[in-house]
Length: 461
Image 1 (spheres, rainbow, N blue to C red):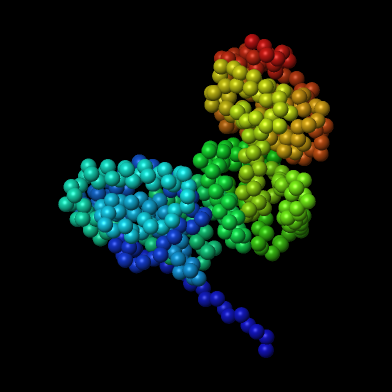
Image 2 (cartoon, one colour; image 1 turned 60 degrees about the horizontal axis):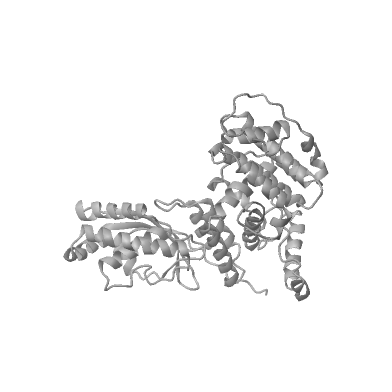
C-alpha cells in the first residue's frame, strides 16, 4: 500500500472582542514580523488615541473600541505575529509603561523592534509626547486608576489567523487607524512573502535596503513618479498616480510556484543562470554579471528580484539626474547633465507644479530610452534635445499644466515607441520634428525654453 500523507487540518480564522486587560493576561507571545512597515505614528495620531481613551474611559466611564488587531499564529513556533495593529499596540505599550514603570513587561515593550531609524525616532519622540500628556492630565496618585479604567474599558476586535496566506490577504486589505497602509508597504509585504524559501539574512538585507530607500527619500519617487508611469505609458495605459489599487503592476512571476505559461521559461532560465554566474569566482573577480539585466517594462520577478529591480533603478536615476553625484557616468554624460541643469532648472519658473510635471515627463522619457539603448552612441545629443522639445513644448503651449495635460499629450506616445523600437534609429523622426509657435501668451520666465524649441537658439535669454 502506498504511503499516504496526513491531511493538514485547516483552522479557519476566528474573531472576538477582547478587553485590553485580557490581551495582556493571555500571554500571546506577540512578535512583529519582518514584513511590517516601521512605526510611523506622529504626535497627531498619538494624541488623538490618548484623548479618545481619556474621554471614553475616564470621563464618560464607557467602553472604548480601539480598533482591529490581526494576529497570525505560527503553528511551529507558537508565536503570534502582528499582521495589523502594530502602530497602536506600540503606542499603548508606551502609555502603559509610563503609567506604571514598575511593570516593564507590557505587550510589545520588551519585544525586539527591527533596528530602523524611522521606528527608533518615532518611538523616542512619542515617548516624550505621551509622558508630557500624562503629566498634564494626571496626578501621580491618579495614574493607577486611569490605567485600571483603560485596561477594563478599552476593547479590541481580535482576529486570529492560522494560515499565512490568509494573514497576508488580511494585511493587504486592512488599514491601520490614522496611518493607512501605502502601496509601498503592501508591496514589501507581498515580495517578502515570496522570499519564504530564501535565507533570513537575504530577507533582512532586502528590508534594510527598502527602509533605507524610504528614509533617504528615494523609494516613493522611483516607484510612483518613474517606474509606475513608464510601465503604464509604455503599454498605452495613461495612468498617473500610483495607489494601492495599482500595486499589481509590480507583481509578476512567482518562482516558488510551478510554471504556468510558456513565457515564463525564459524568465526562469535567466534567473537561474544569473544565480550561477554570481557564484562563479572568475566572473566575480572580473566584476562581470554583478547586476541582473533588468528592463523597466519586463515582467516583474517576485521576491528578491523585485527588491533588486527597485534598487537598480534608484541607482540609474541617481546616475543620470542626481546633480550632487560624481561618478564615471556623470563624466560621460557631461553635455547632457549641463543641458539638464540649464534647461530644466535654469529659468525662473522651474519650481511651479506644472513645470515639475513636464520635467518628470522629460526625465521619464530619458530613463526609458537609456534603459533600452544606453547613452554611448553618436546621436545621443540630438536625441535628448529632441525629447526635451517633445516634453517642454507643453510648457510653451499651455498656461496651465495638469495631470490631464500630460497624459493626453503627444509626448506620452513616445513610451510605446521606445518600448517597441529595436534601435535608436527607429526614433529618428523625433529629431526632425519642428514646432510652430501658436500661443502668444506664455507664462512668465520661459523665454529661454521657447527660443530653444521654436528657434533652436541655445542659452537664449
